[in-house]
Amino acid sequence: MLTLRVRPCPVAALSPGKKEGRRENSLSSTAGGQTLRKTALNAMHRRTAAKMVDFGGWDMPVEYPSSGGLVKEHLAVRTGVGIFDVSHMGDILIRGPQALDAVQWISMNDASRLQEGQAHYSALLYPEGTFVDDVIVHKLGQNDYLLVINAGTREKDYGWVKKNVGRFRCHADDVGDYYTQIAIQGPKAETTLQKLTTVNLAEIKNYWFKHGTVCGLPNTLIARTGYTAEDGFEIYVPSDVATSERVWNEVLEAGKEFGLVPCGLGARNTLRLEGKMALYGHEISDTINVWEAALDRFCKMEKPDFIGRAALEKAKAQGLKRILVGLEAVDRGIPRDGYKVFDAAGAEIGYVTSGSPAPYLKKNIALAYVPPSQSEVGHEVFVEIRGQKVKCKVVPTPFYKRAKK
Amino acid sequence: MAYPKDYKYTKEHEWIQIKGNTALVGITDHAQESLGDIVFVELPKGGAQLQQGKSFGTVESVKAVSELYAPASGKVTEINDSLNQGPEAINKDAHSAWMIKIELSNPKEADMLMSAEDYEKYVAEEK
Picture 1 (cartoon, each protein chain N blue to C red):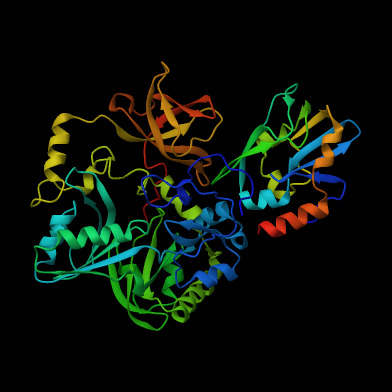
Picture 2: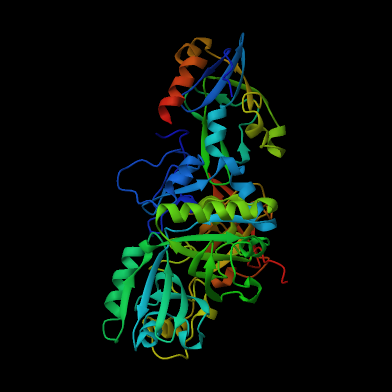
């Protein structure tokens, strides 16, 4: 099944959300094995002749040659619109009189600040202040929260949530299998989706959501969220094959005039990397804490106590040993996941968590952990690429920021 | 895309076009298709000695790094420098985008490689 022999270079887009970062052969055109899970759109992807890979135990499209491949897909999202099947993401509902207390206890952002119809980025932490996973918390109602979690960590997250909300009067339910989650992303996402819904999308602010009719399906969750650093929406529709395929096709049709293309996990990875959005198993993991990952602004130390808080307080007092920075290759070469980082004197100082050519920025970029003393913008470091030390410099992040409307 | 009949092919998806004692080397259409958008090639310097089956460079797409394996032994006499600036030429036409020219040290080695017909079958089985 393997085609070209691939160096053992874990490719971000293809690594499952596990800390070991299983090393896939990204060139295999079929994802073998009986145990892979499938989304309701799997047959659709295969009919479209997408290149499929094993992503965290899911048989997922990495790119669509019919769309023109990864770079075209990436650019479509930056300049027009793209559609992604992200049904492999997990969903946990937390409901009950003490749902807010439970969410506050298990996540680091301050959920009491959320209004109904609002969402925010947050994370589930271990007592050590390291990551179980990062999540988007949606406040559906007064006692009703939806957590959207990563594919590769679904079972782990659910087990962990279940265990830790036990002392609150609430229920945690894994509802991931009930939904097909489709992301419509890009500057033309609103115009595309508007054709298919009665909800006035212009009224939905970034990281807010509404329920409304989409493709004739009443009470559909429409969230202005995404993982591309671009404007866009994520919709949650029933996960039966017929409905899922119908919605997918209607979005394809609606976006046709804007050059909409189906996009795979490859483009999803390069898009999120340009926007410096963390990927579990790369920038965040059970050995990396919140301060190191530079996610301070999503961690509210002043809110009521939460799991990991005490350790984070201690870690802050002790000072950081490493911090996540953005790198840009100055010399020729592509820094990739796992490559080592050296200082000018030749000492090993850190490693790359995600690295890739950036299709829109047309640069070779990376996120890496380095000591705070070497994290200043403009500072020169060296990434070892196949035995050669390639000069890189620390640059401001996010690498890409979309223009405000 | 058709695989030229006068080329020979490796299991690692390189092609070699032999003319007398010299040969051009590249990667196959199947390889470029599997890799996706090619953004980087790293080739040996002129004069480098290649050994059949050993790595002589790398080719990178956005999402993957792959090694290049020499289809035959010999000395590198020319590099296709244009690929440094425009590696996407390999995606456009893999069978004309040669990477290196070599002077064969043992032309008989080519007998161990696949014909176009065998290679096509090999690729079909791999899929």
